[in-house]
Length: 280
Ligand code: SAM
Image (cartoon, rainbow, N blue to C red):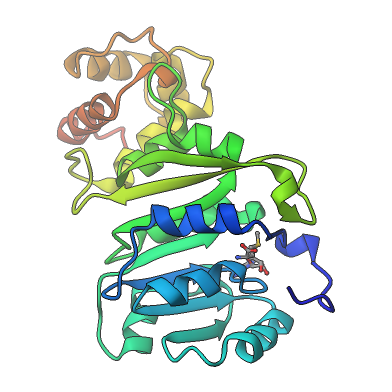
């Protein structure tokens, strides 16, 4: 561990020190010599060390210049490691992999994520094209539980992740395994990404607009939440819900992905002139 580097809380720097947990993270990624891994936020390189030993190629993107320099010194002997400085949210992950390898290849993401941008990174990775086919991410335990939630406890993050892949919690990590310890425990989530989204929708943007509108007023019945969120007359929403075989009095948390997709298809087909599909 780089004793001279003071962790920056503003960058979510909590370094995992436990070999037991590090090994379990790497095990969850089923790595072999044919694998290309993108690691986000390698920090002091604790996880990176295990990754370079198991994967064919590792590309590590770290925002903090101090840590990049440390990593290059400490792990410079590994010819299969490329350390880059930058903000992952400003990079196109697939293009980055192709640029580093000289050709595009399928890749996995393994990362102990900075918690302050977990959702943004998840969205960034899952919406990228082509996206990684497997993600093994350490996140706050409570966030992990939200990601794997099912009806009747769905939420926007669960829909956003499960639209693209199948998430499951692999194991939990107590806060004391990190330095400095965060305020909450963590969990490792493995997401197997589908070759195409789990449900069939005519327009991805419209699908997420409908889902967001539903969850914007989670406690309200769907007909009211959707009418308010989509700017549609309640009668139009009720009719669309009926056509999608969804009871208008239900709440967003109870809907399955297929029901959200069905509703999106009805609204899309309806092509109601009052429903502006392009506005945000
Ligand atoms: N992988 C290390 C470990 O397991 O000990 C460090 C994990 S720490 C929770 C998160 C790391 O992400 C930090 O090193 C931080 O500097 C880095 N980071 C924060 N924001 C980032 C961003 N936007 N892009 C890339 N790295 C980032």
